[in-house]
Image (tube, rainbow, N blue to C red):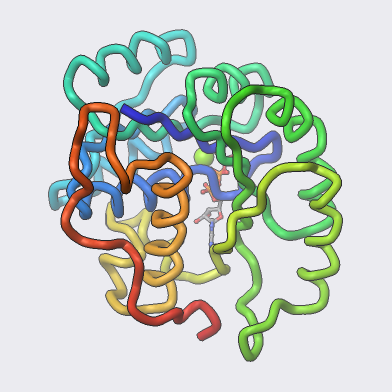
Length: 235
Ligand SMILES: Nc1ncnc2c1ncn2[C@@H]1O[C@H](COP(=O)(O)OP(=O)(O)OP(=O)(O)O)[C@@H](O)[C@H]1O
Ligand SMILES: [Mg+2]
């Protein structure tokens, strides 16, 4: 079983949005997914309770129970565990990071967010664990190019030394609507730019975890590919 944690020191960056979307797409591709909500606000757990169709198994845990949750998930044969963390505590972010195979830092592409990322990024970089930075709530591209403000800010990221994911998640209303219905954006809007970017982000995380070659249990890769035929991110 592989574990991915979504962390950020700053609140509201999109940890929960990315956790539920990555969990849902992985589930739809045939992985057995355990979504762990460590946030006392229980946003992921509440999302799952609104859901009316099968999806990732979602449970809320107290932070101290994370290690136990992970060993139970292993015993139960889950392929992927996704951990949604609260922003408030850097220690808790690091606890989740320590049990992960891939640590995903989540940030909006603004100067204030990047500055707030520095301390946590430094601590993550010092860990012997793979990590990535995913930009969320990025403004839509214009003619396939980032807006100047975003590309200028992205330059600030090189100092952080964390690998920038090649897929950014754009600001779209459908991500907000998803929480009302317990769905994911691709389920609400099939073949949409949101569906495309979510699929491409999962493909990237999947490759960072080597899940698409062979899982720990010798699991063959689930049949369908998350890679969309056409890149619609600029739409
Ligand atoms: N890509 C996006 N487009 C539009 N709205 C978004 C996007 N990502 C997140 N949001 C909205 O921003 C708000 C914060 O997102 P979310 O709850 O996922 O962040 P978080 O990092 O989990 O917050 P917290 O630190 O409070 O746990 C929510 O209202 C969510 O619907
Ligand atoms: Mg959250």
